[in-house]
Amino acid sequence: MSLFKNFKKFKKRVAIIYDDNQKLSYETIIKKTNELGKKIKKRTLIIIISENSLGSLLSYIFCIIKKHPAIIIDSKTPFEKIKDILKVYKPEFIFGSKKYEYNFGKYFNIKYNFFDQYIYKNERYKKILFEKNLSILLSTSGSMGGIKFAKLSYQNLKFNTNSILSYLKIKSSDTSITNLPISYSYMLSVINTHLEIGGKIVISKYSILQKEFWNIFNSQKITSFNGVPYTYEIIKKIGFKKLKTQNIKYLTQAGGKLDLSILNELINFSNKEKIKFISMYGQTEASPRISYLDAKFTKKKIGSIGRAIPGNKIYLLDQNKKKIVTPYVIGELICEGKNIFMGYSNNYLDLKKKSGPSILMTGDLGYFDKNKFFYVTGRISKIVKIFGNRIDLEFLENKMVEKGFKVACLSDDKKIFLFSEKMYNKKNLLSAAEKITNVNIGYLKTIKLKSFPRTTNNKISYMKLKEKINDRL
Image (cartoon, rainbow, N blue to C red; front, side, top):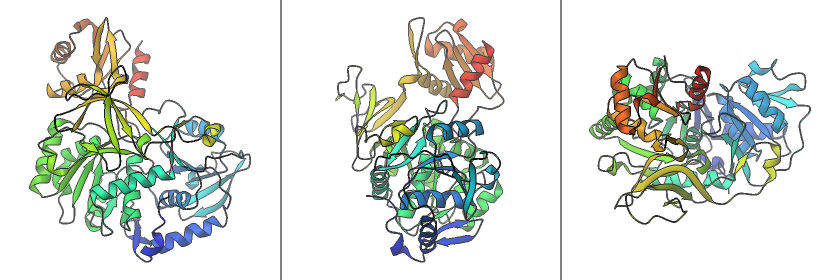
């Protein structure tokens, strides 16, 4: 049970559009992956240092079709961390751009090239045993500090892709664009669904802040646009009208909670322009999508993550691990299904381990309403105690937004730190936080930043914010 087995029947249909208007058919993809498959025959571990490029996308497709386990890391990953990953995984091949030619050292030599991708052979690779279903390894938003990957199987990817196709009703005439990093599980999911059904993926190396991106967006007649909260925060600033074309059919949002005022504006825009807007929830460990809110409920159930994707199951557990059956009671969100990952990996020895349980403890807190629509309220890991007061920092962030303050919050269990990009009135900001938390103002501290540090997935990097706290102590 694997992806991309339908490529043969799509033949000369265009699969990928790159470098503004060059096109690659499904037939050519099969031909090129077969050619490379003659050079890399034996199932082996491959690391893909991914960019939004034709070579990176084809490298991923090659690994899926030819059954090579692949660790996909973003090219913006610090090179010191890439070297650490090479040490603990000892892959036979690295797929990346030519710029790495002089970085890997004398034991890594260029053996082949694959469009704009160069293939480095590790002369000191480790012969590794793999679990037969192991497909790809992806970094999770919670594992940026160390070497830790979520292991996904062929079945995980196929099941999640089929489920998404059934509820989004993606067709072979649909076209999407890489406005998020290919290494990000959400973007890979968009790619999987469109290629699995015979649609098109447009590879863009441009940011949504660049006019070149929107020129491609319009000229290539994009039918689906997919973003994280930060994506829509940026688009709000440059105008939602950028998304208004006669071709766009639907917008999706995942990757965290969108500011309620922006969400309202986005919903109003979508309804006015007769564009479907689908809010979704997921985690990399779930391959990655867990639930979705049908477009017809966006206004009535605003802020909800909706209901489970087809074939999946979500529910809540209380602190005693008992299932919650009463509406509006907060508990931990649990997901069950064939999309749940095989467990985590810290080194090559983990790659031979069998699949883990098909249950994911998400670490997210939430509740469901009387209609069984789910809502996420925060994360267990963001609950702190300040002198006996139990405080949900994510709840605090959301409430502060309602008061007009966009902040990111952390705590060292002695104080709460409120980071902001804007120069707010300090007295008003602290007063609002004091009322929400019931914590004495002396235990609240503001830190003004030029901008929030962000991960490669454009989420606020709490790891880097924590470093800023440590630097000040």
